[in-house]
Length: 638
Image 1 (tube, one colour):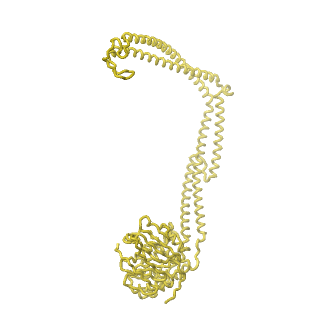
Image 2 (spheres, helix red, strand yellow):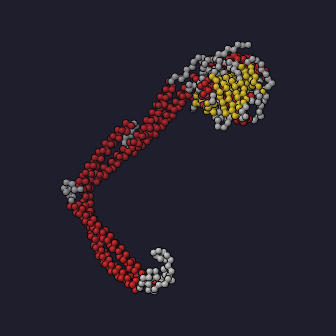
Image 3 (cartoon, rainbow, N blue to C red):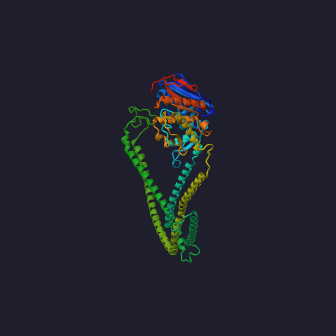
């Protein structure tokens, strides 16, 4: 028996136990040992594959329990957990199958979002947590994407769907990244300098395109504005500042000319010391002011008389209305005399009109009542009101006469004021005529200069776009220079990529040597360190190998990963364990598979790694480095 030579005991992943908790509280538990081949045996639907899926689910699968474990398992169990060691440190990973907790991985009792699990386990294993270009050619990729732990796990957990490819539905750029990570040169390969240089060049090209467009469009815009306003075409902010200063000087000079003209005009209009000498009659202004004051007094008098006239008319209307009321009172004496009173106006008690009373007395208060007394009182009041109305009509007539006189005086003063104003305007127009042409010319010149001044901020803003575009180009060029000149964040150490690929290929060839003529072809495996293509002989593996040969090829690939720590160095991402599901059901002769599994058991013992596989009864494997685990549960297939 070969004595184990374990280069790195405890490094990588070792699964110690898996527990599945049922709704009843019963626990299905399976334990595993390192340094050997652990074989899950049992009839169909005895949860062999389910146990591997449970380990995989605890290792951060983001699918729902129904998708990851099948409906039957998701309905039967409420929780699964896996005891394992990561680089020698023990941990318990737990996943709940109940709603509300499915998106968590509980690590030693502490919950962690499943999306963050990859970063945690990569740190625990001391594997690089990389961002890789999302594409085979880094220079043409548009973005970076994480190289997750799950990507690498697909290469060491060979499930039912990945026996003829590196991993099921895996993109080529991810496959290359995983292989380079396993072989230990991913840190240097994915410093992503080429990607960042390509992105910087794209940004530089975009900035240059924008600058060209801005240079052309801004020049056209500035030229159009300058031609329309007749100012020099400015191609820089300094030229704009010089043109603004020149226009500002011209505008200030025009303002000063206008101010001086205004002073001269005001002096003439308001009777300055030069007004009389210029032939302007200053007495007209004095006479106009006197007439204006007289006119204002006349207006006030008219207003007062109109108000007084309206008040007298209102009083007359009131007296006339009162006379009418008295006349209606006299008329109503006979009309209402026979109407009985039904309600006391004081206490609101009902009054009986049949109550005994004198004919000439009130049947309420018994006072004497005479028809002639009521009429005479109303007639006396009417005569008094009629006398008052006559007086008011006389006052209204006199007020109307006064109003007519006041209106005539106002009309006369208005005509006089208009005549004086006309004479003053005619004389002033004659005096101001020489100034008007100069004022109009100045106004037009000032308007043009002010319009030019308003154009300069717009021109500056347009030119600022050119400056910003040029600065963006300079910034992009500097960023490209910095990236180009920067040293890689991680320099390759130890073996070169070519040596690493050669050692890994040699380990695969040493495994396949025993199977030449028993399912394997004669060609040796080589690996291109440039694109990590696996060749069998002179052709790519996927062009020369059929289905059964592909299975043997990937068994050799898995076998070689067990020796990574022995063959390479600390840089490699050493998994330390393998999971193989249904190797017997892939079309290869059963005796070949038994021999392969014995080789895996021996490799696990030599390297101290761990292999977990599934096997349907009645095939048996014998050896101290092989442990059979009989599955006790059988459930209906979903």
